[in-house]
Length: 76
Figure 1: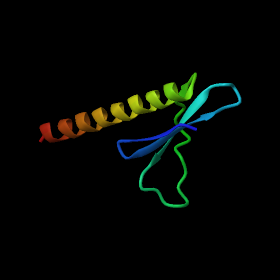
Figure 2: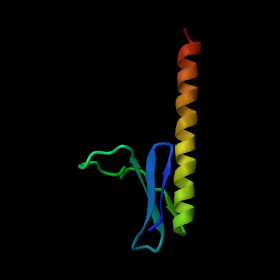
Figure 3: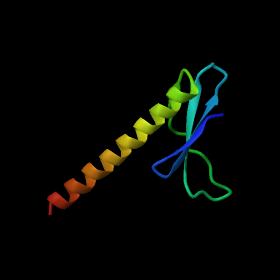
């Protein structure tokens, strides 16, 4: 299993029954009873592709949060 850390998240890819890999994200530090985010379906043909897509997703979240904060402060 290929695992990595990126922007405070642990990311790994799990092989599904359909033959594709699904990326799982877990915010760090996590408690012992923490669960992965099951609402997102980030898939790839191999582990590296699934993890790369998860990183792109996290980059997009950061950009959206920055845009939202900037809009909030600009409207004052």
